[in-house]
Image (cartoon, rainbow, N blue to C red; front, side):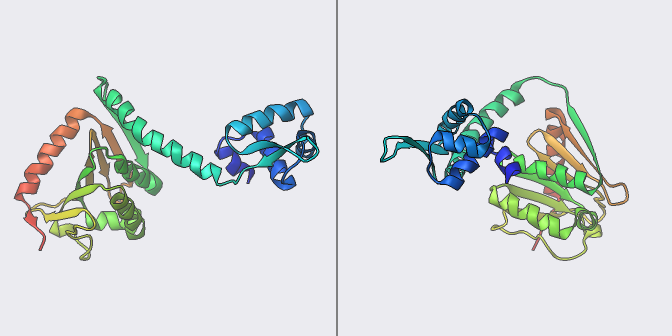
Length: 245
């Protein structure tokens, strides 16, 4: 519990004072401070900080002594929801400033299955809500595997991100992930002479490369020029590819 309270921004003394208030249900500051193992002066300071978060409040008891009363802990969820709404509005503005600033390409190399999972998950931050992918099915179903990919696909759908995907017959293993409006996915198959042996995702200004299990790595490159080139190449391949029936 302490680790989780720390994750929502309460330091050690705030945790002790808050938990003491919850356990007592309603008590004078001095009693709560004693239960929390802090001085009376610190108790008033902690109470003020926790009042700002809406976690505690003060009321006058029948004897005229002010009582510390905890609020419903659901206030933490409401606080998180308000923060999420604010970030949903703020982050796109910050990203527009970030993307408009001239910068060198950023290259990140990830090793192993966890690295591949992390690289794939970054594509779900796609601001345009439109991904372009070349999927090497045989390799992708080995690493990171079908079960993990099902979770990834569910999250992509949840975030409203559409996927245009090209696959090659030579790398097919089973008839899954076909064209599906409800899954926000359109599938085409590349000409039969093409063997697409790596998975590639194009997401905004980022290109993500996923190797086979044999080499076991992922590479992400943030570059507007590279992403533009790869998108043009993808669209050329898309026009040559057959719609999935």
